[in-house]
Length: 152
Image 1 (cartoon, rainbow, N blue to C red):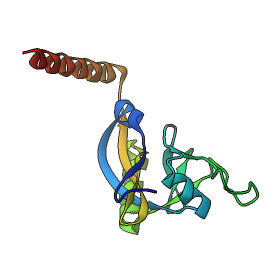
Image 2 (cartoon, helix red, strand yellow):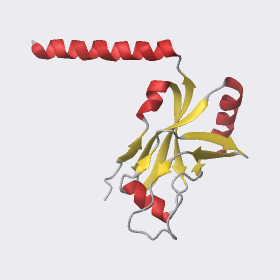
Image 3 (cartoon, rainbow, N blue to C red):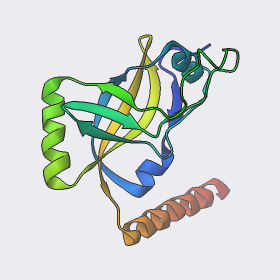
C-alpha cells in the first residue's frame, strides 16, 4: 500500500521543456478504481496538461491504467478528463495568467498528502531550444565536478 506523503507519478519532462514560474497544489476528482490504480503506481503524467474551461480546471491526457482485478464494466477509461479542485480565487489568478501572458498549466507530480491524492500543478512558460541546451551543459558540468571531487 502507499506510504504517507508518497509520490505516485512525476512529470520529469516538464522541468526540462518548461520554465516553472509558480506551483499550485490541487485536489483531483477520481473514481474508486482510479484511486486504487494510482496507489498501485499505475499513473503517468508524461503528456498531461491542464486547461481552464467554464471556471473550472480540467486535467487532460493523464493516463491512469485500469485496475487489474476489477471487471471491465466497472473500470474507468484510462485517459478521461478529470476535474482539478482549486479555490475560486486561485482559478481567477490562473485565468488571467494563462489567457493574457501565454503561460501553460502542466502537472508536475501526483502524490498522497494526509490521505488525499493531490496534483502539483506548475504555471509554466515553454523553453527555447538554446535554454534546453544550456540546462544540459550545466547538468554535465556539475556531474564532471562531482566526479572530480569524488576521485580526490
